[in-house]
Each structure stands twice: as structure tokens, then as C-alpha cells.
Image: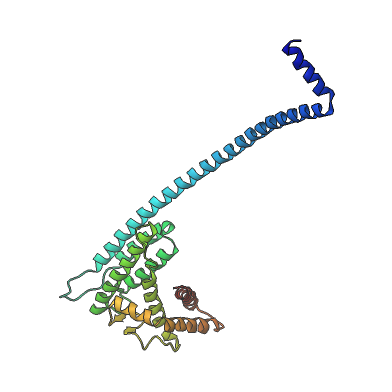
Length: 279
């Protein structure tokens, strides 16, 4: 009996027995399981590869969009920095001579640029720029209003330089070139101070008024303190500032009839109160 016949006999014996059948079936099941597992694996692999390709494509689109936005922001910031520089230069005069108010065309130009670039500036920057613009108006001569005096124009110039530097630092932070926590805090403190001084004419008793060295009326602003010194004082009296803002908010909220400027003051007071609470 040759070897081949022995193999056939052994196989026949195995198949004839229950145990042998189990072995054959188990082996076949194992083989079949591996075949189906491989097929499922290939199917799932193809499916996930397709999903991964979609995700990669979407990510590339989003990265391209972010790159375009970042570049446009950079260009907008550059344009605003140039506009701020030009506006300050328009005020600049010899310190040994009397400083004269400026033409309102400079303010109009700056205002137009702020509006045009507002899409990429962001709400915080736009707010700070409007604070800058409002101060800038105080150095402009309008025939129907009292003419700003020499010292007012000089002081506005100093404050605009200070605010401009803070805004530039904010722009640098936005494009990843600065890590200062809150570059616009100083600007917001100055704006809060001005809001409080403007509100005192409504007959509200405010705590901050006696602390600081500023005189303010409807048309002129008289600073007897440098911007940095004023900001330092404001930082030392944050509780008084917040208390005054709360007083202004309560005063306006309880009025039955609110005029437009009062509603604007209420909105501003709420805005700065929230900022200072989170500072």
C-alpha cells in the first residue's frame, strides 16, 4: 500500500467519525471566517479611506480660508496703522508755538477707513478705534462750537499717541506677534473715565470724579495728567469705576422715558462694566 492510499484511508476514517467531521468543519469555518474578515476589513478600509480623504479635503479648504482671512487681517491692520499715524501727524505741531485745531477732513478720512476695514478688525478693535476717533474730534474746529484751546489740542495729541500704541499692540497680538494679555484694557479704562465724566452732567453723584485730575464740559476736554498716569490711577481705583458704572446703569434703567443719548450711555456703561468685571 503506497503513501497516497494511506492518506485516503486516514481521511476516510476521519470523515467517518464525528470527531473527524468536527475537525474538518472547524478548519473550514476558520478558513471561511478569515476570508469574510478580510473582505469586511477591505470594505471598511475603503470606506474609512474615503471618509479620511473627504476630511483632508475639507481641512485643506478651511486652512486655505483661514490663510486668506489672516492675510486680509494683516493688510487691514497695516492700513489702520497707517491711518492712525497719518491722523496723529495731522495734529502734530511745534510745542513752542500755539497749537491750532485741525480740519474735520482728517476725521472723515479716518472714519471712512474704519468703516471699510471693520469686517476684519473685530468688535474690540472697532470699539477702541471709535474711542480714538471720538477723542480726535475734540481737536477739530467746528464754527458752531467753541474752538478747542491750545492745551486741549496738545493733550488730545498725547492721548491719541498713547491709544494708538495700545491699538497697534492689539493688532500684533491678533496676528501672533504679541502675547500681552489685554492690550486694549488701558483704552477701555480711558473710555470708562470719559463716560463717567460725561454722565456727571445728568446730576448723578459719582465716586470717581474727585479722584482724577480731569475737567470736562460739553465741548472741551482739559487733561492735567498724562495718559499713563491717568491709567495707573484708574487701575488703582477699579472698584470706584465699577461702582460708578453700576450707578449710571441703575439711574438710566429707572427712568420712564429714555432719550437716545441716554440709551447709548446705558449701552456703553453695560459694555465697560462687563469688561472691568472680567479684567
